Length: 296
View 1 (cartoon, one colour):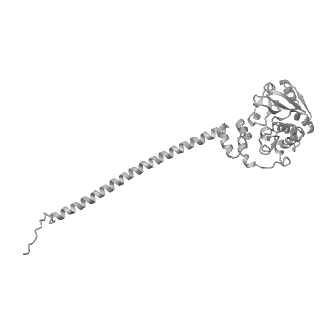
View 2: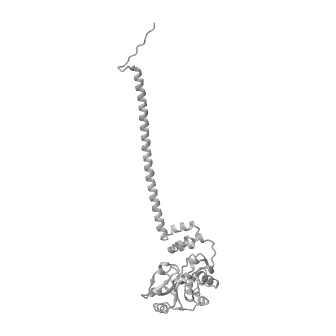
View 3: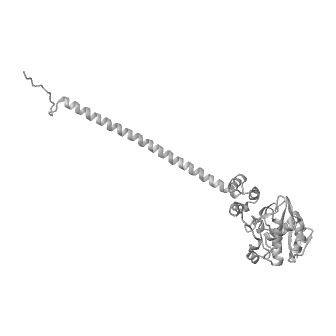
């Protein structure tokens, strides 16, 4: 006997069983969608935190780098020993030149550029100082001029221990007008004629005996305010060997080129642009001078 099954229907005509299954499917989809949304929100939160951390980390790194660059620049400009040594040693710079940069920050650029001139041959005959002679009655030369400073003089670089021949070159060019008597030429002359003493520098004899060999008329004079001012007032030029003080911590040669309008002394210091731009009291110079030579 065939029996029709009885299926209960709800008011909309759906069977209860079908409705239940449909509700279950909708609930499952809703749960999956909600779960996916929660997962996506969690991922977005993590991404935001990561971006925030990255931006914060970048700002910190940028700030640290900026501070480091500023500090490095300041320390380098002032010739701070650790920084200048690190930077210069990286370019294979010799110890004596690094020490020059530490003692005299004005020479830092010259010392830094050592690698560009390493192994270069220097020819005194090829050096042109005609413009220097045209600018001043007594030219102002620096030991650490790239035209000759990297050349060897005695047991070190001319930039390090060449104050003697550089000063004599200034005077020789001023008194004779001979542009061939540039600092390198005079340094080579001094070394060839025994006026360089290893470990000490240029001998005092260079300033009188050596000067005579170069055609100059020179005599030694007792350093005092009166002798300095009177000689300069007569148009003469002076080289001083100075002791530790305003110009050096050991020993050094400087040129007294003339008198300013106020009676102060014009100094050409071969190791300092700044000191050469100043004028000096004659007594202040005399007090620091061990010996001086006057050139007529």
